[in-house]
Amino acid sequence: MKIFYNRIAGQNLDRLAALSDGIFAVAMTLLVLDLRTPALADGSARFSTPLLWTSQGWGKELALLGALWVIVPHFLPYIMSFLTLGIFWVGQQTQLSHFRTSNRHLTWLHLAFLFIISLMPFSTGLLAEFITYRLALALYWLHLLLLGGILFASWHYAQRAGLLKDEVTDAIRVATQRRIVLYQVLYAVAMLFCLINNYFSIVILILLQLNSAIAPRLGWLDHA
Image 1 (cartoon, one colour):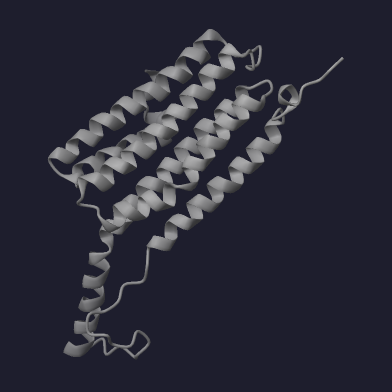
Image 2 (cartoon, rainbow, N blue to C red):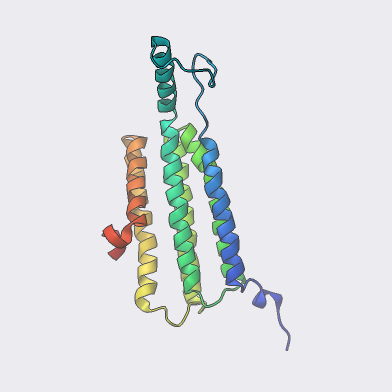
C-alpha cells in the first residue's frame, strides 16, 4: 500500500510539547532583558561608598530612587507579558493533553502559534519603550488576538479532523472554545480604554490575566 508522507508527518505530540516548552522558556527569559539597571543622572560611580548619614549620601539614595521610578513603566509590560506567556502556555498544553494524536496540519498550526510566541519579547519591548503610544498598545493587542485565534483554529480543526481523545466530552469542547472567545472579547474591550489612557488598558489587561491565572478559586470567568 502506498503511504504518502503528508499523512504520517507531524504525529508526535511529545516532540511538539517539548519544542513548545523550549520556545516558551526562551521567550519568558528574553522578556527580562528589557529591564536594565537605571543610570544616575549625575553619573556617579555605583560602587562608591555611600555616605548614608550625610546630605550627600541621602541625595544619592534619592537619585537612585528617582532613576528606579523612571523605569517603573517598563515593569508593567514585563508583568503583562509574563502572565500572557504563562496563560497561553497553559492553554496550549491543555489542548495538547486532549489530543489523541496530531497530523501535519495541526502541527503547523502550533508552529505558527510558537512563531507568534517568539515575537512576544519584541512587542513587549516596543510597548515598554513607547508605553503612551496607542499604536504600540494596539500592536500588542494584535499579538494577543493572533495567539487566541490560532489556538481557536487549532481546537476547531482537531475536532473536525477527529484528533481529540474519546473522553473529551461535548461540554469540554464547548467550554474550551467559549473561553478563548470570551477572553479575546474582553481583551478587545480592555484595548478600547486606551482611548482614555494607555495605562487604564494595561491595568485592565493585567487584571484579566490575573483572573485567568487564579480562575480555579476566584474565576467567575472560568464558569462562563
